[in-house]
Amino acid sequence: MQKIGFIGAGNMAYALASGLISNGYGKDFIKISDVNKALLSQINTQLGVEIFDNNIALASASEILILAVKPQNLAQVCQELSSNLEQKPLIISIAAGVKSIDIDRWLGGNQALVRVMPNTPALVGQGISGAFANNLVNAQQKSAATTILNAIGECVWVENENLINAVTAVSGSGPAYFFLMLEAMTKAGVDLGLEQAAAEKLSIQTALGSAVMASKSSDSPKVLREKVSSPGGTTQAAINSFQQQNFEQIVSAAMLAAFDRAKEIGDEIGDEIGK
Ligand SMILES: NC(=O)c1ccc[n+]([C@@H]2O[C@H](COP(=O)([O-])OP(=O)(O)OC[C@H]3O[C@@H](n4cnc5c(N)ncnc54)[C@H](OP(=O)(O)O)[C@@H]3O)[C@@H](O)[C@H]2O)c1
Image 1 (cartoon, rainbow, N blue to C red):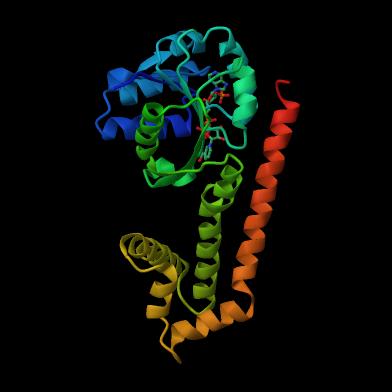
Image 2 (image 1 turned 120 degrees about the vertical axis):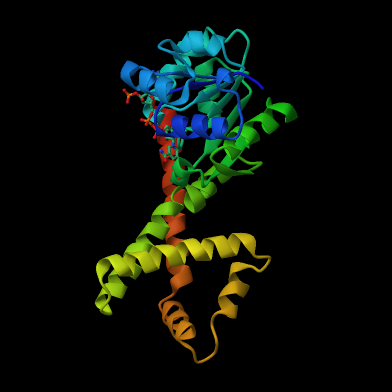
């Protein structure tokens, strides 16, 4: 086991650290730093991991360093570390939108670096992360990063960093698309006469059951849909209504908007912070 240090003890770091410990990773190998001492002592009580109020001391004690601060704090954290990374740990950044080339520059250059786009279901161990490794990351480091990301769900590697913007459009922002669908289904159920609580429960459990079915089945979502849509039946009537209103085009335009905004944010952060 390698020593993993987290800078930033917020929601994501907690999800990753607790997931690692639940998966059998030794708590003695996990260390966390933060500017918030109350939060650190809470994490120490909850997880029993070593805490630091100094990022440089944490970095010196870590073989893998996970940058888990908000994007707007990342340049400052990297610049603080830049002249103090003697052992050159593997850097894993989970900051949304911040490009590896900017992080590498802030850290002083020549840094093995993995950039990750996680999503919120990570907080309940059901996340999916998209990850990109720069060309200084070796196979052993990539495998260690996969082990870490599997602690909060699953992980998909992309070869080209621009594809992280596509990951953002699919899975990073994706939970909100499903929440929107749940809101709409619940409201429509209420309009059809159900109690709010019943409509919400029916909608949420249907989404959960369908996702579990799709993840376990060897059939594609298209085949699964066709299997439950008998010609002339109720499901087919609903699908026809969705398709007459260009459902696929609505989804595609929404995801293109997310993709374009992810690219814009990445450019803005790189240009504006820590030049
Ligand atoms: N939450 C999600 O679902 C999600 C999804 C995708 C990506 N991400 C990414 O994951 C990263 C972490 O998100 P989060 O929700 O866990 O954030 P968070 O809860 O705000 O945690 C970040 C922690 O870092 C601390 N911090 C700020 N500056 C610091 C410094 N210089 N040194 C050490 N610690 C410092 C913050 O303290 P203060 O609060 O006092 O500033 C806070 O406790 C973000 O970059 C975000 O983009 C999160």
